[in-house]
Length: 210
Image (cartoon, rainbow, N blue to C red; front, side):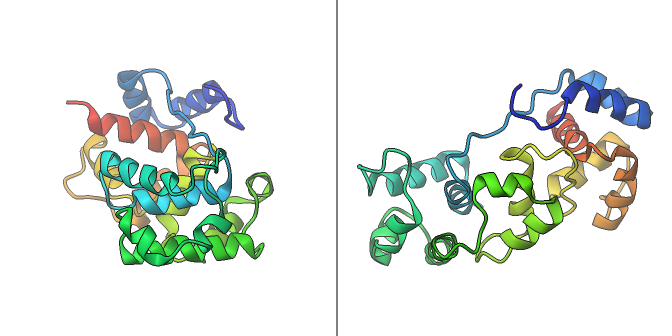
């Protein structure tokens, strides 16, 4: 479990002490096994996120593989330059929707123009500032930006309030009859600071349990 900019064991201990109900969930789920996705670049990570939106992992992986196959010499992954030099119909031919073609092209233009940070620069930005910059990209909403912070950068204190499965997991875990509003979930999550990413991961895993 390498790559996290915090100590997972310390985070788990903090959460168990701060919230007895969450402590029971943590004990039931077991060790913290969240894995970070390897990212060659910020462009590569966000382009992949756009491709994967609203698709099954299998279908998205197939489409992403077809886009990669357009650029056989790009051994380190396709770049903004590759995307901007490719006709729309070729990208559509890979299975990308019109909206996703426009989104990937917008991302490519912004990265090529220096509007977005590099992966290294992103590491130094505060969560709120980084999210603010990422959501300017067509097709990247707050949820996608939060997933990037959690699963690419390993930020410890992200609570994706608009994630339906997280709200559902909270309702199940804490025996609520109705889904919490984002505002209610935010209030409930105050006690999980500064490790709300870890709390979110445990709630998602709890939802998978019978």
